[in-house]
Image (cartoon, rainbow, N blue to C red; front, side):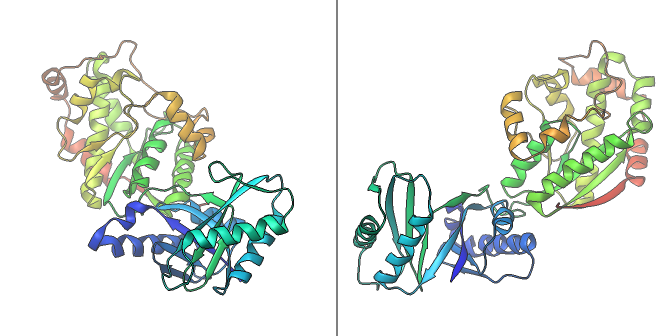
Length: 382
């Protein structure tokens, strides 16, 4: 028989009395990813799924908290049978010159120690597979043997995305634009267990329906990892036009950012979320100087997480490519952050000056109207 053997992060195993909560949530998330067709079992730091295919492995490995998945052959705890399977697995591998055997002996009643098992199985492989040598330091392949209720033998392991089970760290609101940075920021916080609710600011007719569809697609890319995402589409035209008509031009960007975060905070209160998440990177643009960030957040009651704040565009782009959001992010459809940009925006705004400029705006009415006309979209994974 064979199964999918799933390894999860050691960070989960170290949760003490809370370990079971994290393990059960992880299994629930795997179940959401693969459906009810397969049986899932948990035992001593491992999860077993009674089936294997490349598509199934891809879904499981993208579940946050998983560090690796592999196809394991299951046999009785008999050295000859273990050796037979290990030999067959090695014969199927191409371009392998060196190997080693690693054994995990969870069943302490098994008569041989881990090193003894590895030594014997390695000897069987050397006798029966031509052209191989043992290299315990840098082998081409590792033959893994786990002695549990049965013996599990496997070689190739597919790397998982790691992190913590999605939803284990509460809920946050991601300010999702059509750019490269914010989807990466959302992914990074989701990887730490934060459940995401997204807000996109749509300024019809200045931003097109294609720009909106682009953001929906980005949310769908994130949902590959999270299962599903609730996306709020905030009608931002009235707020933006009021700012443009009544506030100093060089302060437009910072005031607009303040309204964005305050609308997001209103969504957070509605969703019982405890933090905001943005894709800001320190010094990247005028609204992301230290002074601008301070002024942007000054009237918020909840914290703002900026997971990419210390990263440059090369770093962020590398992650965007890895999670398959980059090509969508660079589509040429503008969002409200890239229209009506002042020629010379303030890079070191003063909070008192910004608050004085905002006095001409009816903040409560503008935010209330925006909230009343939100479109809510449930975005599912691909």
